Image 1 (cartoon, rainbow, N blue to C red):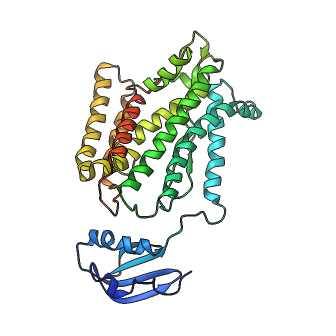
Image 2 (cartoon, rainbow, N blue to C red; image 1 turned 90 degrees about the vertical axis):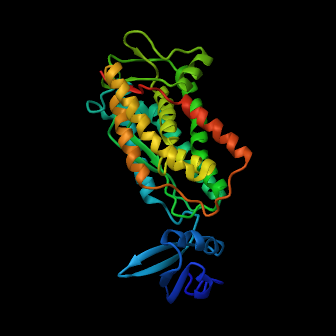
Length: 361
């Protein structure tokens, strides 16, 4: 770890945005005590590029009555074994196996050994989530942005998981990087979704009296299109259900649509911010209105089917919007190529939408 000031980043080098009256170096961090010379939210934006060039990430804190600019050495690699990631992944394997057993009509409580029969379902769900998150991770590394490995979220629900996330504790250098990192996950996930769906519809249906407690999935156009191209059905007769691997494709499509909502720290917000800059705010405000409107329509005209799903997401987008969005250090607009890719991605996102994704009973 460094025990000295970063080269070229002495107190005088920060005078354009921060007046330094004391410097402390400890445990690899450099702490500059002083006063902002510009609006507080602009200090880091002004100074971060020069710290980044020298291998540091910087943040502004307010501690015990004074401002502290903290510079921390950046590392884009994975240090040691990521035990938290491993533990969460193994837990999610178990919860997806348990959830999958319900789709196969297996009772794992009566015979725990039969959990293994649900491995195709677990592999499909975890596969599409992993490909999505590693898309983000790969492009983060490409742009030299520090990112964690995926954190899978186990949950004892009908899918066995709440998804997966990566954490980026770093500055985004420019709009190009913001766009690439944001769009990589959905595009990679869509490829995995198509592959998993194609495999799933090609597998034989399963015999079940009632699928996962009477849940019916609504398939978006993307899933319907893959099945139609292969000449395979998505609905079977009494006592038969589509192979549970198809549910992995449904998860991929649903996760892609939700992630492409242009709100907060979701992928759609990164892509939209990179494309339209500060106009993201206006787009973001329209999202919960649209979701609540959809929930209201389903409640009034469709017997309330799936209305709760969109009402919940309406509230979530309100909260996510308050958390703010990523701010690239360089606000230079992206080029035509990325704009075309962005438009294509949003079209594919629409193909992942279905107004009634989950119907109970």
